[in-house]
Length: 416
Image (cartoon, rainbow, N blue to C red; front, side, top):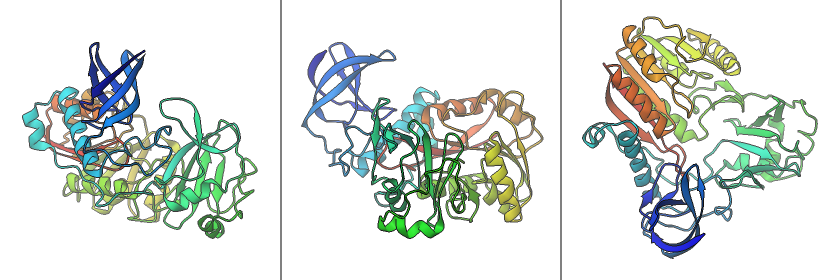
């Protein structure tokens, strides 16, 4: 172990700071570009050296005072120590870095098509309307500790919607080791599900108890598999645009701003879809399907998760739109039809076999792609596959769906 004093060069994917000493590069949590720090270089993780921050000797102008006392140990909000301006600049830099380094686009190309980061107009404290927890040995909801499997019990969290945060301390002991997902909808219902698919519901008549912090919720979740009230969430899927149905296990954007910004950017990027054939990949429960269908698109929606597909069927019937939805996985065996526009919102791992898929879509007549990415590295890889298939990147809009963290999303629009 060595101790050294260094200046942080920059922040890199994963949110850490890149530093240099006589042996080369290493990475440190909790720093800002320009910080002069004292650090101990301790270990290698997947071949990279990591340092532990001992002291900030001279803070950079990017640094601010975190508003959470758990910032040093919690694995959640890793950029709480950065000003909003610094978060914005650094996220734009992460996007450019991924496009150049992973996507192999030239700096000139990137400058031409990347738009400024779209961010909330004010700090989005309490913005997360859904979260994933692990239950500790005492039966309490916990987050993972930073870069470890340790569990950090959470009684309240400033990053969560106040209604969701108020619920955490009111729950009875749960099964140790369980993974629990909780979410709050537009009606104020907090609902959840655990990894055994036991529905956990805080019924509508108990909303006031969660808001006031009383103990009226105790016992609601005491019996596994017991459901109290309505387990469905309303409005989360379309970020409040329609009261569409989902549940705590079905994917939706965790912040209202992020969901709405992605939805609007996709609708704008798809252009005039009235009467056009549109293939939607990773359709989920309809967060993009419903507004695209309302715009007149003739949609074929593909989704691999049966639970999400059931919600999608319910939502399209509820709002009177016609969608050809089918369950299938996105791979080289995916059956394709003739298509005009393709919209894809894949998970963090990106689009499997993207290069081959885009070549096949070009052969089927696709003239426009609208690609959502929640990871710049896999998103850049997928864009390179699309360009290799004959598409051109017209515009890419980064979106700050998760202030307080290094995570950044984007919506890219490509044409042939």
